[in-house]
Length: 282
Ligand SMILES: NC(=O)c1ccc[n+]([C@@H]2O[C@H](COP(=O)([O-])OP(=O)(O)OC[C@H]3O[C@@H](n4cnc5c(N)ncnc54)[C@H](OP(=O)(O)O)[C@@H]3O)[C@@H](O)[C@H]2O)c1
Image (cartoon, rainbow, N blue to C red; front, side, top):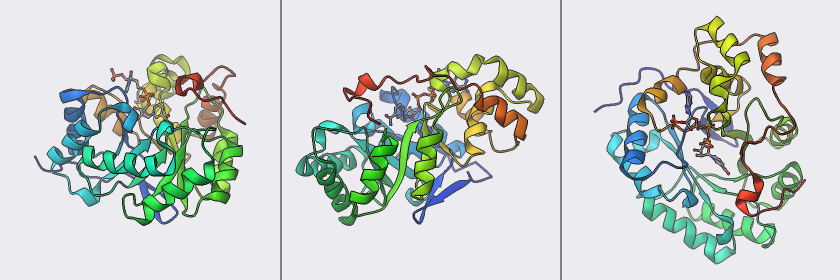
C-alpha cells in the first residue's frame, strides 16, 4: 500500500538534522505484532521510529520499515546502545549488530541508552563519534543524561550530540534538563510521553481535551509538541496510532499550558532509574 498520509509531520531542527516531532515508541512491542504496528504507523504518516538493542525487537522493527513501502530517506530511525556495550570496541560491534538486525546501512540517530559510570564517558563518546564518522549513524545523542552529564558530554564529544531522550510528560518537571538541552542546541525527545498510559484518564487533561474535541492522551502529547519537544508514544493498537498522530491541528492557550504544567509532582516519574541498574546522578 502506498503512503496514504496527506500532511507531513512537523519537524524540530537541531544540529543540522530534522527530527519528526512525532515518532512511534516500540518498547515491549514484539514479534509479528511489532512489525505490523510499525508498518501501519508508517502507512498512516508516522516518519520516525524509536527502538533499542535492549527492546529485542530491532528485527521486527526492520521488517515493518521495509514492508511499509515508505522510502528509507523519508524515515527517521533511532536505536540505542545498552550501557553494557559502552567499552569502545564493544560499542562499535553493538552498533553494527543493530544495523544487521534492522537491515539498514545506517540509522538516523544512535543513542547511549543510559549513563554508565563504570566506563569513562570520554571513551564511550569517542567510540560513538567514530561510529558516526564511519557512516553507521547520521547523528548521535544520549538518553537519560542529567544536567551535569549533559554538561560533561557536550564538552567531551568529538561530534555534535543531537538530543537527550528523557522521561517527559505533565507529571514530571523536566525544566532543568530541557533548559540544558536548549543551551547546547540539543533537541529534547520525550519518552513515556503519556506517562505509560496514566494520562489517558486524567481529569484535567480530559476537561481541556473536551474543549478541543480531543482525548486526554492527545492533549498530553500536544502539550509537549507545542514546546517543540519530540514525542514517541508507544501503542500496540492500530486505532490508537491515528489518535496519537492527530495532535497537530489544535493549539493550547497559555492558561491551559500552565494548568497542565501544574500537574507535575515530586513522585511523578513512571520509569524507575533502578531499572537500568544505574544510580540517579545529578
Ligand atoms: N530511553 C529510554 O530509557 C526509554 C525509556 C522508556 C521508553 N522509551 C521509549 O519511549 C517510548 C514510549 O514510552 P512508553 O512506552 O514507556 O510509554 P507511553 O508511550 O507513555 O505509554 C504507552 C502506554 O500507553 C498506552 N497508550 C498509548 N496510546 C494511548 C492512547 N491514545 N490512549 C490511551 N492509552 C494509550 C499504551 O497501551 P496500548 O499499547 O494498549 O495502546 C501503553 O500501555 C517507548 O516505547 C520507547 O520507545 C525510552
